[in-house]
Length: 334
Image (cartoon, rainbow, N blue to C red; front, side, top):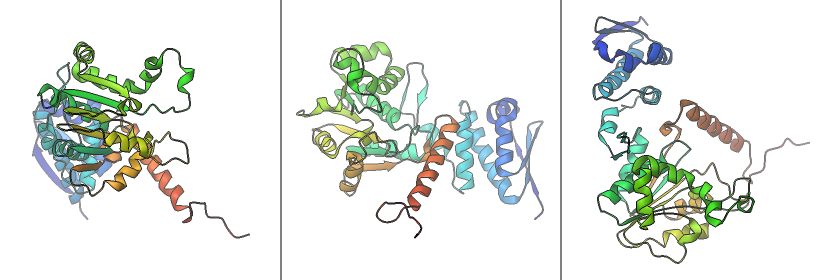
């Protein structure tokens, strides 16, 4: 099939942003879609097979429009738009760009960066309880935190409660120095980090002293009823079924809960069932509960993280396919 050639207007001032330093993003688009791109005098020429050219033009138009709206184009934007184009899905980056949840203390807009993240935030808005399940780097905790802080600032809830199970991953709590709070703080550090970035250290400390923001291990939730609160349970894959049931039955009137976890990163003993895994099966058909499953396409950390997640998914799939129904590896007859 003969190659086709398509030209489009391309404002020169957006070239460095859309195509990256030393044209790194342009080269990525060319290599991924097998097209040639030539930018000269405000015109962009795209040469290649017809479908590939259509995909390239669609990707560039999305990135250009994002640039015109004042965004700095990142490698994640380019990778995500390319992956959707190869699956013949529209990127809708502009739609994502319009969904601003809040701003950090530095003024940076917090918004979903993938379609999966957008569905996740929409479920959080619409449902009383939302499960966000997916691999590392998909923004499960960070977006839930942003939604909680926005609701708190808008007086939709009176307080924010952040919790996670203090499960050891190799080291025992007793080996760490200090009192109980000092021992559990390392497990809660990711929650503190997100709060500092979105709310600011001073505002966080003031609200924490007033009891309006609480960060605590899951064990502290027993026996409480949590009314008018935004509650986030992080690392829920490390809960037992009893802990998960205990947490879900704490939720009171005027409250909203988000439960996040990654079922591929359980630190529970080998023979223990994850409370998150069980809850997803038990509560799947309950009307007021939303379940959002994020994938490696929703990873917004360094592109290498997305490759790592995909590699592990492939490895786990191949390992499981080599097992029989009993869960034991197939062996040849001797």
